[in-house]
Length: 347
Image 1 (cartoon, rainbow, N blue to C red):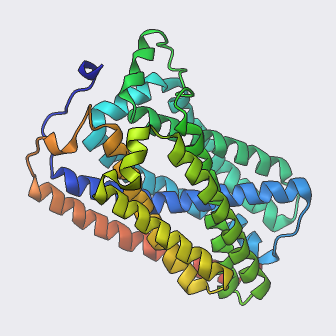
Image 2 (image 1 turned 30 degrees about the horizontal axis):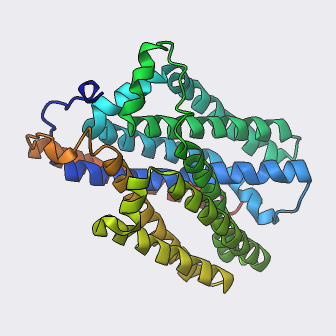
């Protein structure tokens, strides 16, 4: 099966730098996606159970189109850097589940359009329950396909299914940790959205919103830890052993992320927003490192980034950094203008 995996031609820059950029953009992207998916699930539950959410929380209806646009734009560079370093793996996994993968494009466009409809209906106080349900369902589907593709990327031994199914309808449902990986992502989305409710309550001087948000973050993070333990146990025993201590460098980052998540739990229970947020951000950073370590360990017998050849094109890279900086400044300007424009409006 190793013969199915090949190395690309020379990369245009150092693989370690390209990986770092992929992690950075992915970190921002996943944070925004967590907010979008988590709030979609919150409001779906609210509509089904007719439970109470602070009125301040309705601000997310108005801001969702902006968050969605940012999330999509952050996904593009993350995906591009992933393709540069792991191109042969990513393209192969995408082809094997091509039907589902291609459906993501119209699904994202449709969900993006729905976010504007929901925002508009929220402002006019008209019924918009069906839009919330449809959006949540499609987002859950998109998330599952993305997790499935990245999981299949890490398991080249499964690629032989292509010779039995060339329709692009395969999903790696026979990989045990896929389900816990997906559930871990969903629980994380809910926890992040809970924390965002607390942050919003802080800036809106809404104490009920602040406390409710931190409480949601605490209990949903506990749920995420439980799913995370199941995720760890579902990994192959040799991989699990490396995270638990057989590989000191890998285990160090893993245990450090546990320390930070415990810190975020402790301070959320004390309703200390700033420290909760700080420990959460550190947890998220080290979880991204753990994600990379898992991919590296899973692919160690097939594909090692240390063996990639590269020919640094410094002029092109500096030009990229220049446009990246200009892009960040432009996005910041438009976000500041957009939020300040809506600040005086009633939520």
